[in-house]
Length: 270
Image (tube, rainbow, N blue to C red; front, side, top):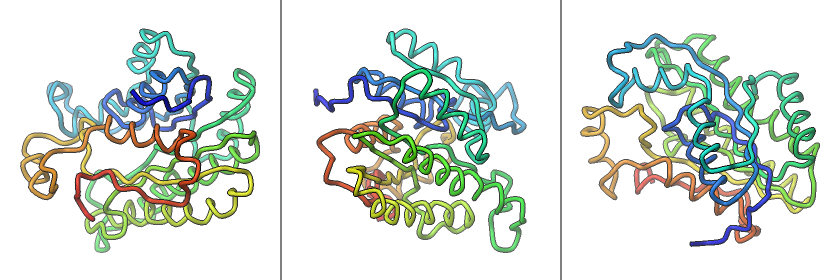
């Protein structure tokens, strides 16, 4: 077992209420390393069929994202983790300021930021022929503005240790069918490189993890049959695969890695 040296590090993770999601899994991974965890999430309400939530697919995914973080919190309790749960909107500057104020009040420092929260259109309007202003505004508000606001505040409360990990997607450069989502993630990758240059003087690193098709409860059996043949490794990525990469980037071992986009995709979209 690798010792990442993350004991007592204070870690903020956004988008952490889906028990099968990358955010929640990353929180549990940091808890395993005895870090102090701050879960930040916003419930997203979409229609779903309650009778179809037992199996992976859109209904399970929509249900998970509409709920609070109670399930994730219960797992952290079982691990006897030190944690804080905040329901908030990172696209709002005042809310971001309150998030950091509460974290500083409880822990007095912040060491790691994982920008995992994301918004995307689920109704088929994210194509050039169907795109609406609302889709553009909502997507960029969370994926770009929210990430910038969270990073800006992180720098404001800087100490002698700083790791920022942004979550993109492996198809950010070319994402037909989800053009605004892809463009917002491509922007996040560009921000990663630019901000890395700006904050290097503080000894901070800024990196981006770009997951491939990851089973967060969204991919049903039919979609899996379509997607898996496109992955050279031959299987879906798991949230744990992403979480372990994030742990490494947050560690002392990765102190000289910055401004990078690391695809964790099993070879998909390389």
